[in-house]
Image (cartoon, rainbow, N blue to C red; front, side, top):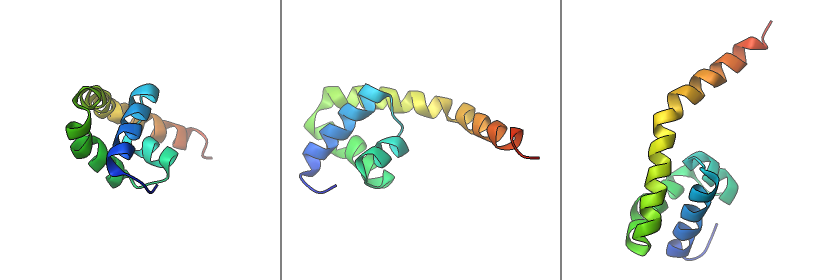
Length: 83
């Protein structure tokens, strides 16, 4: 995804807030790396839009708190269908 990094940061932030997306999910949706998404929403977005930055950080904190549950569910699905 080429273009203005600040504009990209705002678009990524809006997407994460609207869809409660993870960093990986946003990266896949926008066709860029997860390190690019993380850099945009953690550094650039703070300077461009502090209000949106706070909303994104709340979503990412929730995702971080729930990630162990997602990992357990993925492992459960993996072994339920194996012979």
